[in-house]
Amino acid sequence: MDRDNGTYKVVWPLGRSTETAIALNARFANNKAKRIGFLWDYIFRGDQMFPLIQAGLAEKFPGSTFVPHTAFGNIHGHDEREVLADLPRRLREEKLDAVVVGVGA
Image 1 (cartoon, rainbow, N blue to C red):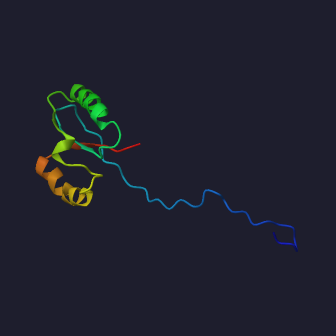
Image 2 (image 1 turned 120 degrees about the vertical axis):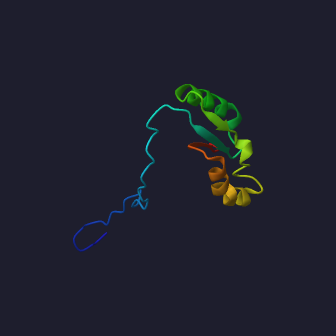
Image 3 (image 1 turned 180 degrees about the horizontal axis):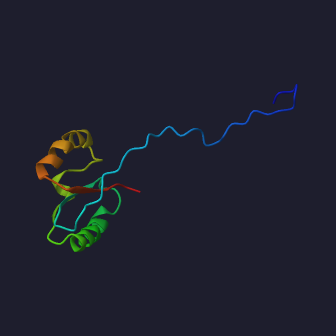
């Protein structure tokens, strides 16, 4: 408070945004078969959700192939640093069109 003129300094409780906007990749232009991989941190229901997601993707993109999360390792486990460091190479090696990432809630 400025006692001389009776004004208060106000601070916005949410603060300034510091995030930088990033461009999203374009959606697939067609419904042709794709090669789709799955990544998981083994924390929240991926074992239940991935089959449902895969079924939906297989319906939308008939003839698609899927690479299970087990092919890549646990992205949040005891060896996560090694798994994540090797991930770009593994994704290129699998020649994926897309990746579904499941993380704990």
